Length: 311
Image (tube, rainbow, N blue to C red; front, side):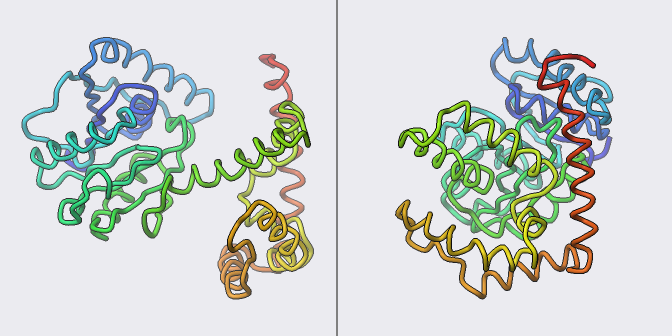
């Protein structure tokens, strides 16, 4: 194995073992490092469990086992280091400085859900090879992840990280800069905050709300994101959606105390331009027809799953 085919993962829990399974399936040499004896003992079984789920999903499965170690090597030779430990800032700060001293070339990524590199390494001079690689959970199956640069992360490091994660079977989404909680959790938190408010206000019960999301929003979102969903749901595409529903959505935002809930015309122009670059306007009818058929197939496939059967 050469340098570009090796990854060192710190933390053998569910996220670390999920990353390990994915990189092993892509042919990487994977080393899992965890100081806890119990975690090390459980790691092969966790990786195998991820592999079984990957096989069920029709994905490539791990090729061979990961190497499991208790302590960091004196010199790190891996191209990529992924820190997947607990969400404790002080521990990450100490670990990152230690990692920087053990390699002059390795990319160092944290899988943190909310702690940016600028808090782990406040000095931009130390950030050049460091970034956030925040995965969906479990990363063995959900391969999209967000790559978040710190102010001092070099463009070269971001390019290298994207290339390595793609080689490992992932689909990276690059952020332009740090934002608190990154994008996954900002999107999730917006829905969950409103869900809590609606229950608190007596508008709806917990199970009823879950069913609206699971059986209404969820199947569509399994096939398209919020912008494409708006594009397909409304005559005139995403611009028509913004014109028809933008004022109502802004009123909801103002009711919830948001400071700038309106979508300015220039922003709508930008969103429409980026959508049209992905899907031309004249292709919208065919895409809508595709979604109808895809939804039917998805609902058929998940029926037995939701009913708890093996058929």
